[in-house]
Length: 351
Image (cartoon, rainbow, N blue to C red; front, top):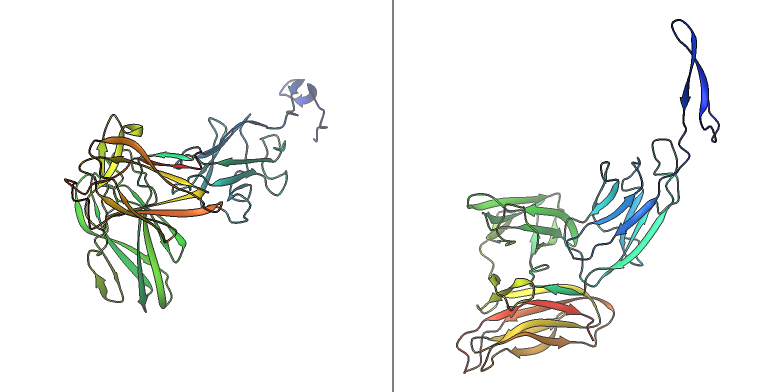
């Protein structure tokens, strides 16, 4: 039996064991709707739509998440929480600070997402910008290894322990997913293998995601060595370790600090200017700063007294994605007692 679309309170005769009875079936004419949208504010936030009821059909073909103005999808996990009625987009690696993104439900039009009565959800499109103020962070810190290989795989040797976090891995710019290096006990020479490569030159990049499992005490990522085609490259000559330092004077309650020459941090953002929030003081050193590989000079953070929340400004950039690199220099001010460089955060497009 087919009910008309406006069938409300229709009495349908049903043959019982002893007599003909009737039951009332109430059709649902109300389509699902979007009640709210939650954009990603922080770099590690999810994106979510709050719907009015449970639906079916949520997936990669009905949900789109892209960098604004581009057709390229941002790699993400898409799911629907049937209890809270939320469509959730989960990017596995941090989003770019200051970047604009587009999130679309049903980018190809209605029909793909419906409720249990078959009522269609209307398309919904949103645009947003990720935070332009980032406190103490190691998001985006990366190390790349370039190799000419005849092997179909490359191996990254790392460490797992209670302080390790999540790393994002790319080869030749293509995502290979994330790796969680947390373990309750320390383990060394842990091999992470990435296969399916063709012969030729490849570049593997290990990037600190800035996220961790709930049990981990930090977001560290360790690089012990790489191997391909029987070639073993030991501990990289360029290393970095930015220790987390708790401080009531720091934004967010902590900052990152390093003092060994060559230790560096990279931070990727979109904007026309960036301010590096740091600390000046008697024990502070010098840093080499570059943006997109273009040197911005040697910055001397020595001062006779400690000055926190000091901002170093780098402007006149195009409205595009840029990468700032801060590296501890090999020299320091003759009056300085140490060579510490502090990163307390970044501010993008601040007037």
